[in-house]
Amino acid sequence: MAIQMIRETFGVDIQEIPRIKVFLEKNLVQWGVRENDLYDILLACDEAATNIVMHAYRHADEAKKNSDSIMLTVKKKRNVVEVILKDEGESFDPDSTPAPDMKLNLAGLRKGGFGVYLMKSLMNRIRYRCQDGRNITVMLKVLSS
Ligand SMILES: Nc1ncnc2c1ncn2[C@@H]1O[C@H](COP(=O)(O)OP(=O)(O)O)[C@@H](O)[C@H]1O
Ligand SMILES: [Mg+2]
Image (cartoon, rainbow, N blue to C red; front, side, top):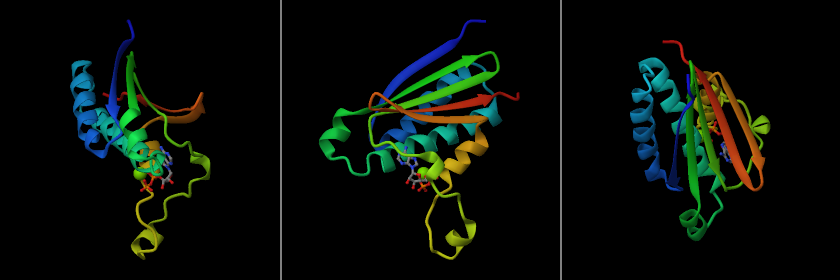
């Protein structure tokens, strides 16, 4: 079976997140991706894109945000969906980000910190690298249904 692939670019803006979800959902449904897998992918992608806007562009000025974009590529080959997000914001080291800590959150000592954990739980594999000034996040989902 041929690889199915779609690509679209989105602005570096939190208001783009719902558009990313609509675009993903429309195409994944067309490819026959069923509910549970679909929602896992949508949520993981929402977290990844939100992190790009909120963290990778945390120090960026409006001009950079307006001129940069988030490039989303989605591929499906047999029962595997691959989601790739590319951005030109600041890079980070996912291995050095602290693990989520429910106790600290409940005690009000820390906010959030569950996005990366969620992405890892929902998808089968997450890879992140920086290459030629671009950050590349690759997420793989093995479809169950
Ligand atoms: N794309 C990214 N670019 C830069 N830093 C990131 C990125 N994604 C995550 N981080 C860093 O990892 C931390 C953990 O991310 P996450 O688990 O989503 O929690 P939260 O977004 O609630 O802080 C963030 O606070 C941030 O410091
Ligand atoms: Mg987050």
